[in-house]
Amino acid sequence: QSALTQPASVSGSPGQSITISCTGSSSDVGSYNLVSWYQQHPGKAPKLIIFEGSKRPSGVSNRFSGSKSGNTASLTISGLQAEDEADYYCCSYAGSSTSPNWVFGGGTKLAVL
Amino acid sequence: QVHLVQSGAEVKKPGASVRLSCKTSGYTFTNYGITWVRQAPGQGLEWMGWISPYDGDTNYAQNLQGRVTMTTDTSTSTAYMDLRSLRSDDTAVYYCARDFDNRHFDYWGQGTLVTVSS
Image 1 (cartoon, rainbow over the protein chains, first blue to last red):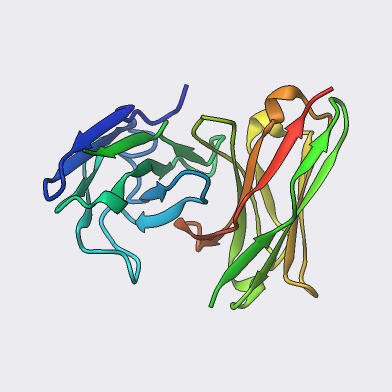
Image 2 (image 1 turned 45 degrees about the vertical axis):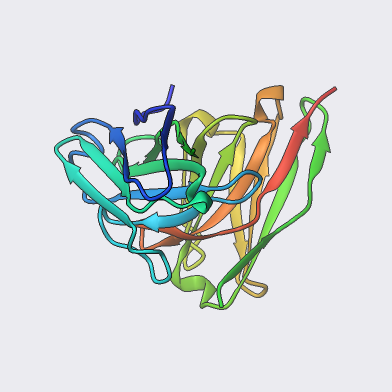
Protein backbone atom coordinates (compact mmCIF):
# COMPACT_ATOMS: atom_id res chain seq x y z
CA GLN A 1 0.00 0.00 0.00
CA SER A 2 1.40 3.36 -1.07
CA ALA A 3 1.87 6.14 1.45
CA LEU A 4 0.14 8.68 -0.81
CA THR A 5 -3.30 7.98 -2.25
CA GLN A 6 -4.10 8.67 -5.88
CA PRO A 7 -7.08 7.58 -7.99
CA ALA A 8 -6.19 4.50 -10.02
CA SER A 9 -7.44 6.03 -13.24
CA VAL A 10 -8.87 9.18 -14.76
CA SER A 11 -9.98 9.95 -18.28
CA GLY A 12 -10.82 12.90 -20.44
CA SER A 13 -11.39 13.93 -24.01
CA PRO A 14 -8.95 15.96 -26.07
CA GLY A 15 -9.11 19.61 -25.12
CA GLN A 16 -10.67 18.96 -21.73
CA SER A 17 -9.05 19.45 -18.32
CA ILE A 18 -8.53 16.80 -15.68
CA THR A 19 -7.27 16.88 -12.11
CA ILE A 20 -5.44 14.12 -10.27
CA SER A 21 -5.46 14.23 -6.48
CA CYS A 22 -2.73 13.00 -4.18
CA THR A 23 -3.68 12.63 -0.52
CA GLY A 24 -1.05 12.21 2.15
CA SER A 25 -0.85 13.18 5.78
CA SER A 26 0.40 15.90 8.08
CA SER A 27 3.72 14.02 8.16
CA ASP A 28 4.44 14.38 4.47
CA VAL A 29 2.33 16.44 2.04
CA GLY A 30 1.00 18.65 4.80
CA SER A 31 4.39 19.37 6.35
CA TYR A 32 6.61 20.15 3.39
CA ASN A 33 6.39 22.15 0.20
CA LEU A 34 8.19 19.33 -1.57
CA VAL A 35 5.54 17.60 -3.63
CA SER A 36 6.63 16.61 -7.12
CA TRP A 37 4.81 14.96 -9.98
CA TYR A 38 6.21 12.53 -12.54
CA GLN A 39 4.84 11.45 -15.90
CA GLN A 40 5.67 7.94 -17.07
CA HIS A 41 4.90 6.57 -20.52
CA PRO A 42 4.86 2.77 -20.92
CA GLY A 43 8.34 1.30 -20.86
CA LYS A 44 9.94 4.67 -20.17
CA ALA A 45 11.54 6.31 -17.17
CA PRO A 46 9.57 8.80 -15.10
CA LYS A 47 9.86 12.44 -16.12
CA LEU A 48 9.62 15.36 -13.70
CA ILE A 49 6.73 17.67 -14.63
CA ILE A 50 6.02 19.57 -11.40
CA PHE A 51 8.27 20.27 -8.41
CA GLU A 52 7.83 22.08 -5.11
CA GLY A 53 4.09 21.78 -5.50
CA SER A 54 3.52 24.10 -8.42
CA LYS A 55 6.73 24.82 -10.31
CA ARG A 56 7.39 23.55 -13.83
CA PRO A 57 10.82 22.53 -15.08
CA SER A 58 12.05 24.22 -18.21
CA GLY A 59 10.51 22.62 -21.28
CA VAL A 60 7.39 21.28 -19.57
CA SER A 61 4.16 22.56 -21.09
CA ASN A 62 2.22 25.18 -19.15
CA ARG A 63 -0.80 22.94 -19.60
CA PHE A 64 0.51 21.15 -16.49
CA SER A 65 -0.09 22.86 -13.16
CA GLY A 66 0.13 21.83 -9.53
CA SER A 67 -1.34 22.97 -6.26
CA LYS A 68 -1.66 21.91 -2.64
CA SER A 69 -4.22 22.34 0.10
CA GLY A 70 -3.58 20.84 3.48
CA ASN A 71 -2.60 17.19 3.09
CA THR A 72 -3.73 16.95 -0.53
CA ALA A 73 -1.80 17.91 -3.64
CA SER A 74 -3.31 18.12 -7.09
CA LEU A 75 -2.09 17.97 -10.67
CA THR A 76 -4.21 19.60 -13.36
CA ILE A 77 -3.70 19.02 -17.05
CA SER A 78 -5.57 21.42 -19.28
CA GLY A 79 -6.18 21.15 -23.02
CA LEU A 80 -5.69 17.38 -22.96
CA GLN A 81 -3.69 15.94 -25.81
CA ALA A 82 -3.24 12.35 -26.93
CA GLU A 83 0.41 12.44 -25.84
CA ASP A 84 -0.67 13.13 -22.24
CA GLU A 85 -1.90 9.55 -21.96
CA ALA A 86 0.49 8.08 -19.38
CA ASP A 87 0.84 7.17 -15.73
CA TYR A 88 1.27 10.00 -13.24
CA TYR A 89 2.90 9.70 -9.84
CA CYS A 90 3.01 12.17 -6.99
CA CYS A 91 5.88 12.17 -4.54
CA SER A 92 6.43 13.94 -1.23
CA TYR A 93 9.27 14.38 1.19
CA ALA A 94 8.42 12.71 4.50
CA GLY A 95 11.29 13.91 6.68
CA SER A 96 14.84 12.84 7.39
CA SER A 97 13.93 11.04 10.59
CA THR A 98 11.36 8.78 8.95
CA SER A 99 11.83 5.91 6.55
CA PRO A 100 11.36 6.14 3.74
CA ASN A 101 12.41 9.76 3.41
CA TRP A 102 10.38 10.08 0.21
CA VAL A 103 6.97 8.54 -0.45
CA PHE A 104 5.17 8.02 -3.73
CA GLY A 105 1.56 7.67 -4.67
CA GLY A 106 0.36 4.47 -6.29
CA GLY A 107 0.05 6.18 -9.65
CA THR A 108 -2.86 7.29 -11.81
CA LYS A 109 -3.41 6.05 -15.34
CA LEU A 110 -4.69 8.84 -17.57
CA ALA A 111 -6.69 7.82 -20.61
CA VAL A 112 -7.34 10.38 -23.32
CA LEU A 113 -10.49 9.16 -25.00
CA GLN B 1 23.13 18.04 -21.37
CA VAL B 2 22.54 15.89 -18.32
CA HIS B 3 22.52 12.13 -18.89
CA LEU B 4 22.29 9.13 -16.60
CA VAL B 5 23.01 5.84 -18.35
CA GLN B 6 22.37 2.62 -16.47
CA SER B 7 23.82 -0.85 -16.91
CA GLY B 8 22.01 -3.65 -18.70
CA ALA B 9 19.40 -6.12 -17.58
CA GLU B 10 20.29 -8.81 -15.05
CA VAL B 11 18.88 -12.23 -14.27
CA LYS B 12 19.75 -13.59 -10.85
CA LYS B 13 18.85 -16.58 -8.70
CA PRO B 14 17.31 -16.13 -5.24
CA GLY B 15 20.00 -15.47 -2.67
CA ALA B 16 22.41 -13.93 -5.15
CA SER B 17 23.63 -10.35 -5.29
CA VAL B 18 23.49 -7.75 -8.04
CA ARG B 19 25.44 -4.57 -8.72
CA LEU B 20 23.88 -1.90 -10.90
CA SER B 21 25.68 1.10 -12.28
CA CYS B 22 24.56 4.58 -13.24
CA LYS B 23 27.05 6.61 -15.27
CA THR B 24 26.39 10.33 -15.27
CA SER B 25 27.51 13.14 -17.54
CA GLY B 26 26.74 16.75 -18.31
CA TYR B 27 27.02 18.13 -14.78
CA THR B 28 29.34 18.24 -11.79
CA PHE B 29 28.81 14.83 -10.22
CA THR B 30 29.66 15.87 -6.68
CA ASN B 31 27.17 18.74 -6.64
CA TYR B 32 24.04 16.54 -6.62
CA GLY B 33 22.88 13.44 -4.81
CA ILE B 34 21.83 10.23 -6.51
CA THR B 35 18.58 8.56 -5.56
CA TRP B 36 17.61 5.00 -6.44
CA VAL B 37 13.96 4.13 -7.10
CA ARG B 38 12.52 0.78 -8.12
CA GLN B 39 9.31 -0.29 -9.79
CA ALA B 40 8.00 -3.85 -9.58
CA PRO B 41 6.12 -5.11 -12.65
CA GLY B 42 2.83 -3.27 -13.00
CA GLN B 43 3.39 -1.46 -9.71
CA GLY B 44 4.25 2.01 -8.50
CA LEU B 45 7.51 3.68 -7.60
CA GLU B 46 9.43 2.91 -4.42
CA TRP B 47 12.21 5.07 -2.99
CA MET B 48 15.21 2.91 -2.07
CA GLY B 49 17.75 5.38 -0.83
CA TRP B 50 20.13 8.21 -1.54
CA ILE B 51 23.84 8.85 -1.69
CA SER B 52 25.86 12.02 -1.72
CA PRO B 53 28.75 11.74 -4.19
CA TYR B 54 30.34 14.67 -2.38
CA ASP B 55 31.02 12.88 0.91
CA GLY B 56 29.56 9.38 0.48
CA ASP B 57 26.78 10.00 2.99
CA THR B 58 23.92 7.55 2.50
CA ASN B 59 20.35 7.10 3.63
CA TYR B 60 18.54 3.82 2.93
CA ALA B 61 14.91 2.82 3.15
CA GLN B 62 14.42 0.88 6.34
CA ASN B 63 12.92 -2.14 4.56
CA LEU B 64 16.20 -2.57 2.62
CA GLN B 65 18.64 -1.92 5.47
CA GLY B 66 21.28 -4.60 5.61
CA ARG B 67 20.76 -5.70 2.02
CA VAL B 68 21.53 -2.54 0.06
CA THR B 69 24.73 -0.54 -0.35
CA MET B 70 25.09 2.57 -2.48
CA THR B 71 28.47 3.86 -3.54
CA THR B 72 29.96 6.28 -6.03
CA ASP B 73 33.17 6.60 -8.03
CA THR B 74 33.89 10.29 -8.49
CA SER B 75 36.70 9.56 -10.97
CA THR B 76 34.14 8.19 -13.45
CA SER B 77 31.04 10.06 -12.23
CA THR B 78 29.33 6.73 -11.69
CA ALA B 79 26.97 5.58 -8.96
CA TYR B 80 26.53 1.97 -7.94
CA MET B 81 23.79 0.12 -6.10
CA ASP B 82 24.43 -3.33 -4.61
CA LEU B 83 21.50 -5.46 -3.50
CA ARG B 84 22.17 -8.75 -1.67
CA SER B 85 20.16 -11.81 -0.72
CA LEU B 86 17.86 -11.29 -3.66
CA ARG B 87 14.30 -12.52 -3.44
CA SER B 88 11.62 -12.92 -6.07
CA ASP B 89 9.93 -9.73 -4.91
CA ASP B 90 13.10 -7.79 -5.76
CA THR B 91 12.20 -8.33 -9.42
CA ALA B 92 11.75 -4.79 -10.69
CA VAL B 93 13.07 -2.04 -12.90
CA TYR B 94 15.65 -0.06 -10.95
CA TYR B 95 16.13 3.62 -11.71
CA CYS B 96 18.80 6.06 -10.66
CA ALA B 97 17.87 9.72 -10.59
CA ARG B 98 19.67 12.97 -9.90
CA ASP B 99 18.56 14.39 -6.60
CA PHE B 100 18.22 18.16 -6.86
CA ASP B 101 19.24 19.49 -3.48
CA ASN B 102 17.04 16.96 -1.63
CA ARG B 103 14.01 18.61 -3.21
CA HIS B 104 13.05 16.48 -6.23
CA PHE B 105 14.46 14.10 -8.84
CA ASP B 106 15.08 16.03 -12.04
CA TYR B 107 16.89 13.60 -14.35
CA TRP B 108 16.43 9.84 -14.53
CA GLY B 109 18.33 6.95 -16.00
CA GLN B 110 16.62 4.66 -18.47
CA GLY B 111 16.20 1.91 -15.88
CA THR B 112 17.63 -1.58 -15.41
CA LEU B 113 15.42 -4.66 -15.24
CA VAL B 114 16.48 -7.11 -12.57
CA THR B 115 14.75 -10.47 -12.69
CA VAL B 116 15.10 -12.80 -9.72
CA SER B 117 14.07 -16.32 -10.58
CA SER B 118 15.17 -19.86 -9.86
